[in-house]
Amino acid sequence: MSQTYYIETWGCQMNELDSERLSGNLKLRGYRRVDDETQANLILLNTCSVRDKAEQKVFSRLGRLRELKRETGAKIGVCGCVAQQEGERILERAPWVDFVMGPGNVGHLDEVLEHGTRLAVEFPEDRKYDAFAIDRTSPTKAWVTIIEGCNKNCTFCIVPTTRGREVSRPFDDVLREVRTAVDSGRVEIELLGQTVNAYRCPITGNDFGALLAAAAELEGVARLRFTTSHPAEVNDSMIAAMRDHANISRYLHLPVQSGSSRVLRRMKRLYTREKYLETIARIRAAIPEIHFSTDIIVGFPGETEEDFQETLSLIEEVRYGSLFAFKYSPRPGTPSVRIGPPLDDAIASERLQRLFDLHEEHKRERLASYRGRVVPVLVEGPSRNDASMLSGRTDDFWVVNFHGDPATPLGSILGVRIDAAQHHTLRGEAVR
Image (cartoon, rainbow, N blue to C red):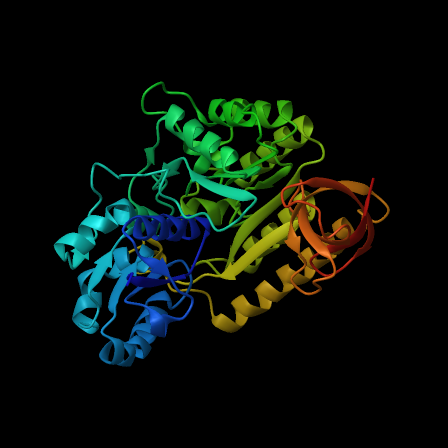
């Protein structure tokens, strides 16, 4: 009888891909995946440390798994960024955990299991990335890591601690994985990295723009996306690749974090407000139809009302289609903890609401602008809320629920006439 495993994933696309890698590794070892943790011989929690109280949530979850371990004898592994951040403290506070493994060791799961390793949080020189042992969950899309880690050291960010320093994969290895994904039927490729556009091939020195162009030119790549870009790493090569290849998505996530140069300096973001807006203008001049999204932190230590007004005015100027904003929460071990205390929670909450109210106007306007247009939509499957409809995304990343032939193959790109704009999505009907 085969061994069984259960994986619970929290966090970003990088974590989702890490779980696909862990799953692929286990399947090669003869394990079978189950959706019920009570049926698993091995339970993996793939954790994220970005949000507030991430560690408490992990320990709370481990407390609930303690009784299950007593009943079933299942092994429990804590993986991901909280594993890297907390390390041995997890084993001390939750001794029923069998092993703790950081993101740098995802490719070494088999060794951890084989040798009974309890703590694997170093960053091995060999990151061991097996592109052929990935249990991809989407029938239409493949995530492909091109660079791991980050060298930016933003004062609020724990990623350099949890993911390590930047390590780029060889150019040809990335293209080989993209070809393999396309050969398996995936038509949409998303290149991943904490700072994806910092990519530099360790062998040839080719930059991100060169890799982007080469991947876009591979036969069968219908859509190519990438995340997350750092504004300071945007260069002419990247912009030219996007401009010259129609299958590169007209959606760019470009986190600004604050509209105040004073706050950006305290965050150590390596650009000013003016430089960021200049970058936006360069991209828009080359690709007028581009859809920008961003991340913003409200209530960073020392943020004044004047600083916040600069953030609002930047949002007004850029008019993001999508925006992700959060109240600042100090992450243990980051320099921002020493800069000063967070803003009063009531003030931060009120500012966050004002920010969302402004963005809501922009989002409604942008969604409404699609009414009556026919846009290409990549079919991903039935609509989540109405099985009689199909669902997919536009090139610039909006979800579209639409009436169409239910026999339409997944991964097809159809023209869809947009009839209505809803709160977060579009609705329409497929046309010939």
